[in-house]
Length: 281
Image (cartoon, rainbow, N blue to C red):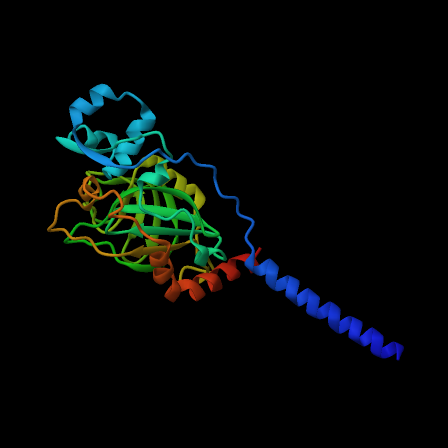
């Protein structure tokens, strides 16, 4: 009788342990950043020089640059730009990625590049950590889409297309084709030779945040770096899509359901590679 009681006790303990283990696997402890939401997000078309005369705030300019998918040097060359009616919110509210994606809860780190909206976003366990503008591949040299992983990085390197182009904070994602993300000028539309151009502050952030691959030797990868998903397409024959925000401020919004649909075919591969990295520590 005592043996039976002990046996039932062991079984009950094992079942409880398994149950608790499942719970721990699902729950994420990632803290959601505290952010200031603007009173309202609507847009108007403004004369660039006139707007710059009235706005000296660096915080306001940062949002304006992101909304127009450009950098300061190219922004001042533009005749007109779109400007949010309220510039007192966090930058995440002016760009299209969702603040949280439940289907990414088990993914420690991931980077998305949206071709149609020319923006990028990083997530940690489904929480949006950083987002900003990008200028991707032009019509003749489009950026390849699909699942990639960060490979090697270099604080400064030379472009494989032109040895006069110096690329800062470069992180390769497609070794054989030489595709990566890095700092370079943002004219405000897709203009690169298949790479993903970034403002310097964003390029430096991703350079330090993402993980490199680890090689066994020159031919074999022990485990891959941070997953990178490039998705969608760009209509090169139409006006810049963000100009539509003047008529409809929600037109470029990427819903959580879209990210889930995009990530589903890649999720098992991402988690498998993530486990390899964890087991190596």
